[in-house]
Image (cartoon, rainbow, N blue to C red; front, side, top):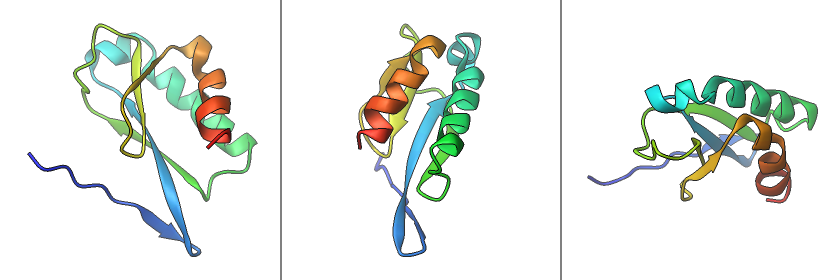
Length: 94
């Protein structure tokens, strides 16, 4: 199956996407807590016009912590305790 990627153009800039898995396994591991944390960090760093946060259904990475993807990147596995460090490294460092 061919993958399609969409970028939203906002004020002449491409909007980047953070996708968090919300499948059953990730849900039980705290995906909604990670979404809330990332949403708060995006707002705190005034990145609401540059980063979009999305839910993604099962990423087939169920043996690991919650799956997170930036744009069309490989999957990252993070837990709630590591969400802020992930944000600083991958989003602020991007």
